[in-house]
Length: 60
Image 1 (cartoon, one colour):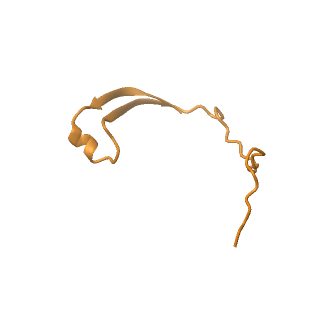
Image 2 (cartoon, one colour):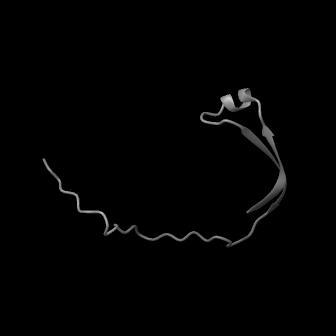
């Protein structure tokens, strides 16, 4: 998806205070949206363990 628009940085600390961890707030106004079908198809596979990790020894 491609978004076109304008961005504005809000430098007011009060605006950022309502968002935990934020220092600034950027407001983005969308003027155009382009959907690109199959641009990034999701590919999933079963996870594989890294051979760099040693086996875990269970102790009781």
